[in-house]
Image 1 (cartoon, rainbow, N blue to C red):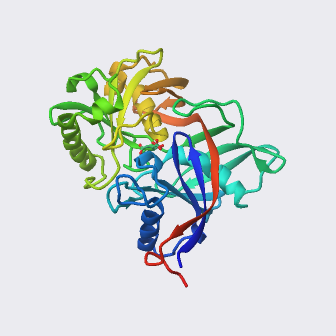
Image 2: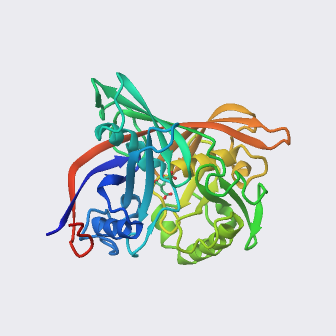
Image 3: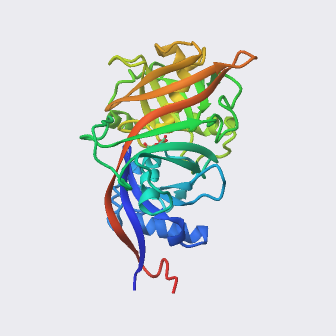
Length: 364
Ligand code: NQM
């Protein structure tokens, strides 16, 4: 008999994945990984024997439980399930799947819904940081429908507002983990930054690219990918992430001047496929780099170097990602990011059970 595990399939922002209660999964973390691989149908480029969508952005998992700390309502552990390798990684956060966590927590009775909207305090276990997610709730139920629109998702839905505080250095220990706004890696200028997601920012021009290529054009350029991977492996060590060969961080971002009215144009390697849009915390890190003097991002962006609150529009292959950023200048003159806020949407697509072959997990 196959093992039946309750779960929900949700779109969170521009990603999609399975949402589980931690209590429905095995207690042993190795077993959890085997179960998630089987649920998604990995390793297999088509993920034909599971629910994964044959792309890293649709091969994601959120594991949610009541929080064990006082200042959060729920704990959220993000797991990236590799499509074509038998690998599951907890080395990064996912701000897109995060957009569905508040709704899932309310639906599963972990958080009581307020009238009109409910603020859910979510501890992101992967990095230990806390975010507040504002979910629209009407008469005690999550409202998924509404007028909010985000680029990369057709149609409209109810808004999910996400607020981040103190996420600088959450994976690498510092906003600028190398101590510099710019480093030279393999002869290229690189800004290594972590404001919620470790990202290495590179000037597309230095790589013979315009920065306006399509994801397919960039993905099919094998030489470019190998040059970028070589920089990534070195940057990973410089950013206190150790050997990142099997990790999904740091992300690699090619930047160019905005050309559609935004502040900067981006193409993101996550890290081996090119994003059709942009990751949430990836966008937060890149927007933060835009207001750091001399960074690779600042050099091509039109963002102002002033402290205070400003809105930064990050262009990506399918539109814009807008980050509201509040910054301060520390006594030593360095930039301190105080708070960021952004808009996502999420939708419950399916609720039921995923069936796992008993050879993978048979708890009876
Ligand atoms: O950066 C893609 C996504 C992500 C992650 C990635 C994300 C984030 O679009 O917070 O959302 O792996 O870079 O889901």
